[in-house]
Image 1 (spheres, one colour):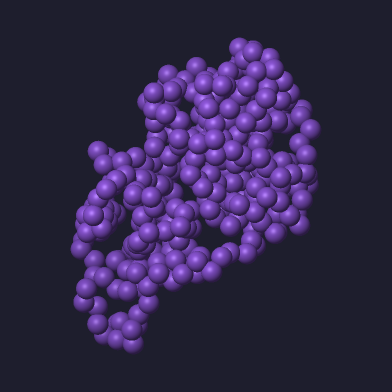
Image 2 (cartoon, one colour):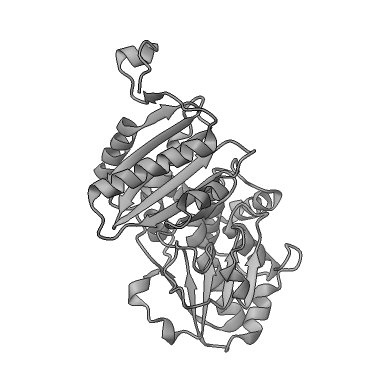
Length: 354
């Protein structure tokens, strides 16, 4: 693994890459700004260092309005994984994800040639020939930004805006798990970025369905001691789930938030916390162990449990058990349920029965 002062992994990789060859850069499924912008930066680096013909591939959907508008306004080119033939590429890289983590569409039998990520290293990643994992970075976009400046590459306005937004969104405006290197990269990118386009992306218009799912999540939300939990049934895209978890954690008194939803026969989970003494990523791994996949960082985490062909009641029972297990991990007592949207009695505190 390279250090921040010695970004040599990419150089070593392209020393072995067939110059002018075909190169595939894969994001995680349902890619966010951090993953998308990192892939775009690696595409530029590959063009300069390897004269590569590079394709950016992704699985799932780009569903969140901000993410879709980022791709549109900044003219970023991404290709769905189902339109890509892996055997046509000389090498495959992964950004902001790692092999066999369950959040990307690389077949489990295939080990990528290069991985660049800021999440904790996984066991399958240790077989990757060229590996650059930096847990002391708040965003993968910061790693790629550092590479760009190290190589002295010309970062155009669109790419600078994408990377700036990648760091901004991943660290919640440098307020969540942001390290000095993230701040340094942000400040270097800021004068190069298109602030008007950035504002359009941040304030993207959303479809009416967004408010339907938001209303549903708030109506279903329950306050349980220092935790707030909600769930959704079928969603149009899974991006809404972490977005709601972020929103719910803003509740006064809440130190934990869990949102669950169902998409294409899978349960998706998002955990958010302000408790620096515990680790959300580790908790997510415990919740999904033997059932699915999950992980993350100290304060944010995501997971997925596949349930193909299962009846709705089985899905609901699984969510019930996940909620119980979650609360056991974050609390030392059985809390009383209080709906987020209170009646007159619960608002005044007269009725706190579950």
